[in-house]
Image (cartoon, rainbow, N blue to C red):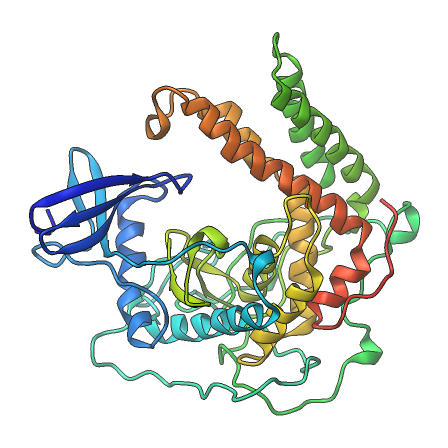
Length: 445
């Protein structure tokens, strides 16, 4: 399909939950062959098309190699495949990075956000309808076209930059605030025991306007804004979690893992009941939207010689709140297996981002709270395992169920432990995302 020459050796790569990958040694070199399973093929072609522009921007991204005829995804026997040049490197847990490496990674994320804005252009008018979700189609910038290149900041900017106005995602139709669904207002924090509703940062601490790096977008949110998913009410999350709890409890011969999941699900129900009033008050996230990688975690970063060699796995490329990606990436990278969040590295990572791009501090605070709430409501690892993994064609054969149990179960338990730790150290996490040294204040869960 890709005319790589005679295959001398093929080795399946065990890493990767959704797609299937091989390391190929051929007469023409060493390559990574991927069978695409995580997204549909049109989405895969869309995402792969933008990688060449990112690589031309001196970013550590390896473009896919085209098949004869120019297509980046070739189809065979009902499956889609793509090929990349092989990149030597290792996956390093985020908690093993130095503070300098964590800061450089945050700066890289900001550069990726800038480059994605330059590499994409809006689709032809009229564009998606106003109720479009956060993953509309985009078209790569035409070859030879000139896009404004923002001047990257040469050094750190003040950690308290004035929040910028919310900005649009490329190619989105006008968004009308009046048509957006809004969740019922949560109770005040005084009506339920637990941590106070965080204010991030306090209004009195907001500095006056200052110069800094250019904003990631330039159009106000009133002109273009996608409609986000509604904040899940606690009663809905309680119902879904309770259903899953009943499903696992009905297993006649539960294994140790099943019993472990039951403990964490019961704890999740306790947290939902106690802190449901502290969910985000509004459906619409604050801050800028833009094209984002969507899955920045240690397994998707290759390191070589203490530097990032490649950012891989762009299947989740979509339009999202950029501050949400900053928050999710920090937590995915810098959380220990026991659930403790490495706050100094989180602060270094977010300050690295600030050294390149302005950060809307209110939007970042809003995104962090949203990630906290969605983590509390989200049981997708277990729902996927108990609902889809048995007989899944991607992981069939001896040991397949054990593989899925380890992959899904480990991720769920880690997130549950993180949620517990995060809730007990709410103020410390808040300070770390604000770029400050963590305090010793803790919250009782």
